[in-house]
Image (cartoon, rainbow, N blue to C red):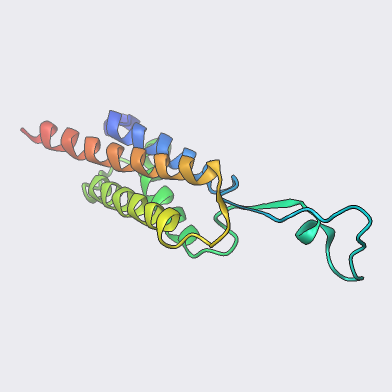
Length: 154
């Protein structure tokens, strides 16, 4: 980050963070219900999308507490890029380690969400897999940035 430049690891983590932020608004959970036979009328007050054969998709912001952790992960991974854009002269050595740690824990939490904590009868949508890949990219970027910092000190 000397002179407002990002290291390769910081750039990788920032790209992963942007991908994670985008993925958080994509569908993660899909629920599709059986379609009703023709001629069956729904009672008043029942929305037609719930039982009428429609499918609904939810992103990570709806019905999960994982969203808060993933948002913090993305912010920590974007911190070096934001500091470089504002020409912050100070370098925080803990940011790379924090980015790596948040990325690893984020990937573990998304894997746990997809396997253990996933709602019964729901479909896993592409947003969840993009989110997992983005968390792994953040972890790799943080690890790479830590390596670059150590190599710079030698």
